[in-house]
Length: 278
Ligand code: URA
Image: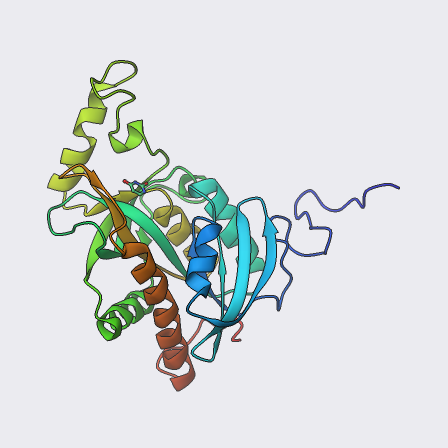
């Protein structure tokens, strides 16, 4: 039997859903949390009821359920800009209007330590992917209401958090100033020694791999974007550890979605006309 042929410009999954996420309109509500790792979908959904896995293909796992009565979902994005772009493009195609990234990050200023939460307000765009969409001077910034909802959520939950100026880069090792070997033998360009100190002096708070790509692609598609990142590495003290941060970030994102939905329904925030309410 021949494979069904569909458009190269808009390929479809065998269930007629979007190609990578394998989701169709109506499979998820408009409010979707974006962890990087598929296994984090389970950690997010542990605070929900009526949880169901909707689809799982490659790095994209989607789970939906109810958080305190609100219909909610999460889809893992994988690591980095390209897989995030695919995820946001396809979520937008099926009518998703609000996304909160839940990820981990390395802090590069002394204000934060392991397990703290950072809510990025804006990012330096070194992700690579967003430059394929729009010129580099275009800002990567979070939706103000999503930031406010994340602040409200962290206050309600009593979590330690701060606002951040994030650096998103398409590299975990050399591009984040991590040498191949401790003695810096092997490939180690001189600029790599200066990455962290130069960012710190520019008051950048943290470094990770997805947020600016998601903010720019989501914004250009008309979506509301935000992020809550748990500090898993301290680049000032050279320490790595979760310290309870991941669990807190997961819960803060669900709570922030509930806050946003309350605000949306109260008419406090007017959703862009082309966004579908659900
Ligand atoms: N994610 C990153 O990209 N870098 C870190 O240091 C921690 C998490």
